[in-house]
Image 1 (cartoon, rainbow, N blue to C red):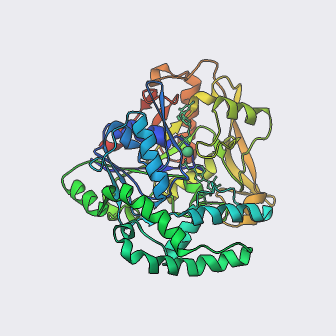
Image 2: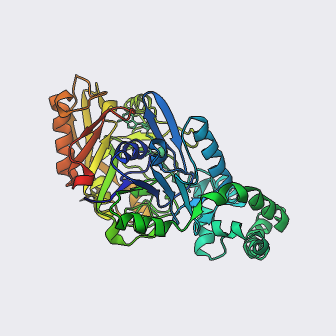
Image 3: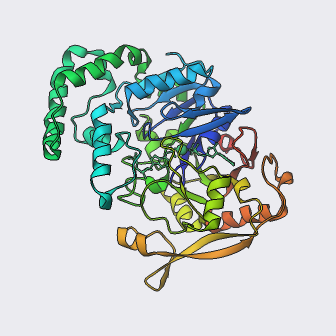
Length: 429
Ligand code: GDP
Ligand code: IMO
Ligand code: MG
């Protein structure tokens, strides 16, 4: 019996929320280990939609939900998300939700800086969610961040804020903006403290105890492997490691606690924000994928760029995350297409290559080499077993397995929790 890590295997929005919710029926604890409220995970249960950004998707089933130390936490965003979910009837208490006391805080100054940088230069724009994710991680590794535990001891907060502001006010002066005062930041933090403190705990210890007791832990990744700060399409990435290896570091468990790695991939590809996207379609087919797949960002509402499945990039992320099996989502979006293309190689400066090059220039220049497969006339939408899939759809899934050199463990055929085909149970692997 393995603990399972769920990671995005493309550029995010692969359907991680749906799959984590589906799998969390089999889990005892669900833990987020990186990212922050840049994530937008959507679950649909009996027609009711839940949108989660910071809260682990297990909260909807009432599972013990943990926000690990690797997450950057905006305390005001956390409070409002808890209130919003409670308003939808989800029971969230300090018994069901625990937040790592050593997690790093996102302050309003981080969001402001993020937006400022994004707005100031079109040429270097990343297309971030402007949630302050990058600036908060910068402060964490710069060793000047304020952490959740610091809210428990407000009398010691002012010197920490001064340290932080010595950096940020220098930047502000550079931008020609007024400086922040210690009082303003203090008030922002002090007002959040009473509402978040009840949830704080040494979550690494809780996870370790649960693991020893034989409980099943489900690690919920955010973003996707191609947005990983090391392995993604740098610099058009997020500011954390999104690959499966981060599950251990970002939750405070050793690498052996992670058993099975489930990568989530759409049957096609999407990306929000700037950066290379070799199989992007700007034609009618791309628009059709976007419409049928309702490809609009959960967090920012931006239309997602759409394109064919990139089996080369997916084979690579299966390796950088050590993926044991793939959950293939949104197969239904391909229903009715007469033919479907899959990228099986790239052409770079007249030569065929079989991996995503590391250089930014080469990533922008590569051209996809496609294999064309026949579409299917029947429908896959809502299918819950192999038997309900058209023969050609099964052939497509099998061909993807060959191309990415990784088995498909689950297939998803609609946003609804129950519209899922189980091929191999990750927890029983
Ligand atoms: P996440 O960030 O990886 O959790 O994915 P998002 O929730 O941002 O985006 C995935 C979108 O696709 C959501 O609106 C889901 O409800 C929806 N979705 C998930 N699986 C399927 C599926 O198999 N078919 C269809 N049509 N929609 C799906
Ligand atoms: P989920 O968990 C898709 C993208 C942004 C931008 C880049 C950097 O829902 O899959 P950031 O705000 O993190 O500094 O932005 O990363 N991005 C996502 N794209 N899904 C996400 O999360 C994303 N989180 C960040 O669009 O290109
Ligand atoms: Mg999303």
